[in-house]
Length: 224
Image (cartoon, rainbow, N blue to C red; front, top):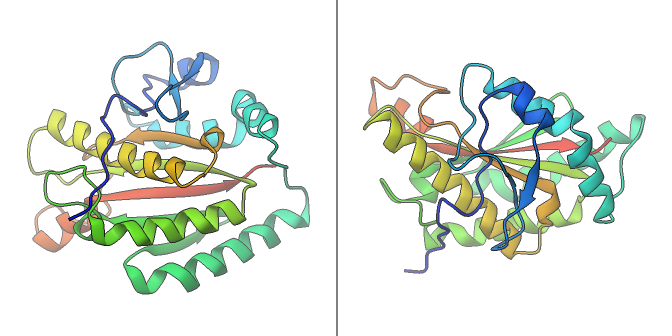
């Protein structure tokens, strides 16, 4: 069976707080070009404010915007923002919702939920061969709508240790982002993080809930 894997050291954004994140330096990983912090050695957004920090990074970080614009990606303005994201959301739904990927619109943002039960084997960060064509479709649409930031965030259920779940969530997000870059999605658009078991969307007391919590989320935000 064909699978796709990247080491967890390759493309993970590691943070310890908002002030550090917004002020810290960034480097480009030589293996695939995805952004990572230059001052940390491990791989996750840490703490209760992680979601807000990720949003701030995506929408307000001048470094990131400059990198995207420098890569030849145009910014959106005014009413064009909503129309652009409307079209992208419609195309994503048409292509993906029958294939196990859930597409949600939140304001001008689009969230793709990739359940790990169809994306990864249990305890593995190797993308299942059967899911690679789906990610090919994701990459195709992302390339058709280049004026968006792409935040790839891994999540885990509560089975196993905190450290194991954090590492697994990072590696899964890492593998997903790396595959998109391999399919010509510009690395300047992408940030990667792992959240471990800290952001469940369902109860971890049931098998069904744990399956929902094991996921990779891709959030698309307009470049404005």
